Length: 380
Image 1 (cartoon, rainbow, N blue to C red):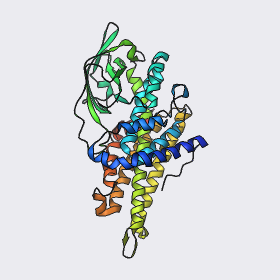
Image 2 (image 1 turned 90 degrees about the vertical axis):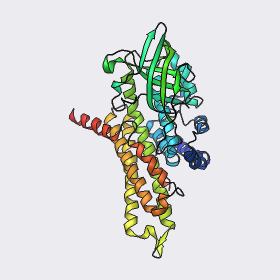
Image 3 (image 1 turned 90 degrees about the horizontal axis):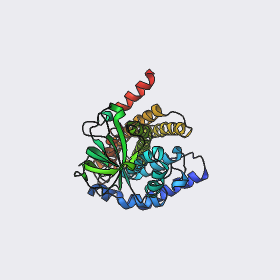
Image 4 (image 1 turned 60 degrees about the vertical axis):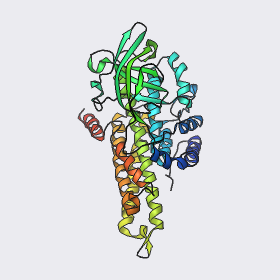
């Protein structure tokens, strides 16, 4: 059954209804084949953009929906419940737009942001490197000033939409001054020297292309730098708090989808003369799954409401990401168990949900990093 939601306005209720309709009509019929074939669903993002679902947390003046994060994240959850790859993609796209929106000049925002938010241009976010995942300050990719341009060299690992995006938000080192030596750049697809490795052969999220981005003498105008020189890491970290909430919402949707599938199966499957949901041992497993989904939702919404109120929410974002993704791993694993042997086959989607849940504990900061962030807040 769909999640029961308490939404702040009638407009937000309409948004959830629209998202559920699009998910049922546009996402659900494609997800199984696309995930098995590893096909990137570019047209789906165009559809979501045309419906206004890629621009919800941004102002109306740029074509955004001017929705609070409390609403945006619940829309993202609804997408994630049907197709996690697309939910992750929407979250990453929003993250790739954030530096421009928050730190760009009026001229930059006017030139680039409308196309990004409309779905015409899909984004990618280039922060991690092969040796600098949890420690972005150790990055080695460089941007060297050359007259009115910067020349970028290096490699960015684990880039969602790598080779598929229309623009790349790239963090690169402009000096050797540690964390203060990193800057942020807007790099359009097609720029000479921008190359991509073969997509990663992943355990799950096969509909989400992940690839290493190669920067080989990539020249961009100095006007493509976002924010001040040396401000890049602070820009990146500011965006990651919101990105962690996005992943928390997608993970909660994934868990909800697994719970829904398990409940339907448990109502239909019989053992010893009655539906297996009527056997207490299995019914209690389902009850624990439901409690995990609801607690994850409450946790990310609590953090979102702090963000909407303009209050600090970094610790709460890490807690939400930790709780939601750990719960998603547990719920999807239990969903496979509820379905028994059937759950271990590709005849049902729960084996895919379980594979997809694992990476939720890893990207946007591993859950070990989230514990580090939370403990540092406590020590202050």
